[in-house]
Length: 403
Image 1 (spheres, rainbow, N blue to C red):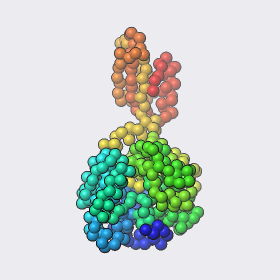
Image 2: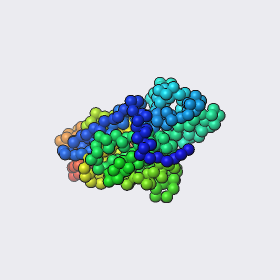
Image 3: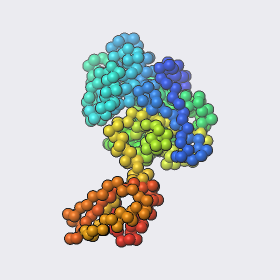
């Protein structure tokens, strides 16, 4: 396969997918997050068909198959978003699709993939194991393989995001893009640098799944032993060889964000902009919010790559986001097991403006004497400064705090 990708390739991809793939909006980020006069914009790929950017590359790649390949059908491996992109592209192009997904893939993503007419095979506990099964089935059935990121036409399709950004915001100064396998980052960076080399392009990975950063530091593709992160869409242990080479050439920088920062970004998008983002979709905004890309000079675009979050995980992610932003905390302390002692503690917390969400007692703790009780509380607070003030005052009143 020819691995050459040029700006003309990406432009051709844009022509092919036009009318099928949405030209998604650039939404001004909330001033309550970045302040008045901020020039941060969100490229809302969560509003794309299937809920993520993946349809771009999948449709372009599958549209370029030879007729005999289309007749045999295609196969891919995916944790969810690429699966849906390939499945919908197959439905639109009338190509039979087989999708191998990890056994632990969210039920919502499995159901969505099947709804587009794909045959779904569940195999393995992660993407890499699903990929092994997909390769085996490909060989047995002589199917065409549609890789999630290590394919020049997939990369060209994802690169159309860069074309749209530069068309809608030609005076853009910085573009921040999530990295999983590296296909989108490679395509977007190539497109933007070919159109305007002065635009800074920054890739973002979760700290727990920084496979591209590790590979660039090593000087070759370096698989990770573990990549557990709530941003499951970018939890890729091994980046693609072609994306690695393109990212090394065109990215200006790669930064990482913590799990708490990702959760806080999801929460901010929900509260401040009424936007639903999955973990992978929020990593670029998390990097901008936490100053990872440096001072913001001029218009900055954070690509929100997808919104296919598992609703069963959403509550836990919101709780983590609240805790990370200092709006929810918990602690334990020891009080005398006498009438009025708990009331005294709760009155003190009320004067500080905290809201008590739950209280539990433990009289059997090994850390207490007879006549004492461990009280554990979960509280709603304003921010981290509020928590510090609360802890200081509690200490001044003789309470020993365990958090």
